[in-house]
Image (tube, rainbow, N blue to C red; front, top):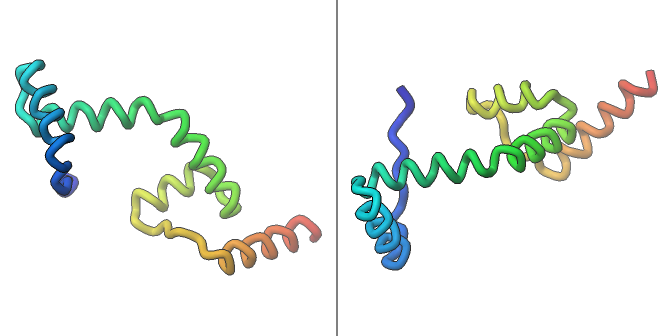
Amino acid sequence: MAARLQVPFLGEHYNDMLLIEAWIKDRSGPAEAQSLLCSALMRREAARRAIIERLAEKRGVTPATLIGDILLGKASQLSPEEYAKIQEQLASETSD
């Protein structure tokens, strides 16, 4: 089972909105927060897929490989130097 996600305090305004939303739906605050987060993630699915495709292309890997690396904790943000090195490698592979 994955580790439990801990969210920092939302601030007074957002915390009030969450509690009101939970009350309207007769849910606990954590249950409503979970529902809202899942809903937001579903709405962003197409945008997330497009971002993953772009970042995978930038790294010279498939989207599936990048997703696997992210889930395994092996992916990292690229520095400009790392990006330049990858581009040089890709250019030399295509010229061969």
